[in-house]
Image (cartoon, rainbow, N blue to C red):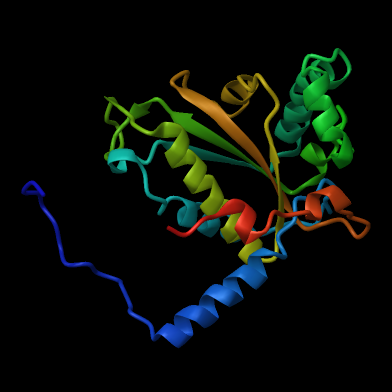
Length: 225
């Protein structure tokens, strides 16, 4: 390894293997309880919770540690209404005008999704996640970013897990194109909307499609060589 500035590993704690196994099992049992929902309550969620979950997302690994992400947390009713209006324009093209193509729409059919997205107004928080084409490890840098999609995807996973651990539910929403988010969130052109995360409590009558509960087994998703 080339010479570089470094410090001793600061926070690592080694655990007994029995505790490691227990924690792995416990985490799996807990994360199995995470489900995507499309029926949200309007109950408020304190901003402090959202702030800390975003900070957790910001600890994710990234290409060259450039941290090529930005999170716009939106609770303003007018902004949420505008996002819904703009998103539903794209969704109507997707579903009603069949822009998606029959194969894609057929794959979505078991989930019961359509062009109506009322949760974009009902949920207390929307988080616009942006991928930065330029940036750097320091604020204000204008360097090329690397492994942008991979880095932002990992950070988004951290964010979803953090929100779940607080007892909140989420929905990943990706209307395309999503350029309207740059305008609503006042983000520059070199940032590309990556995902819109809907966050809050589930509605009392929230349901989950049976199709969404079917997860592949370990043997179907992994091999050990």
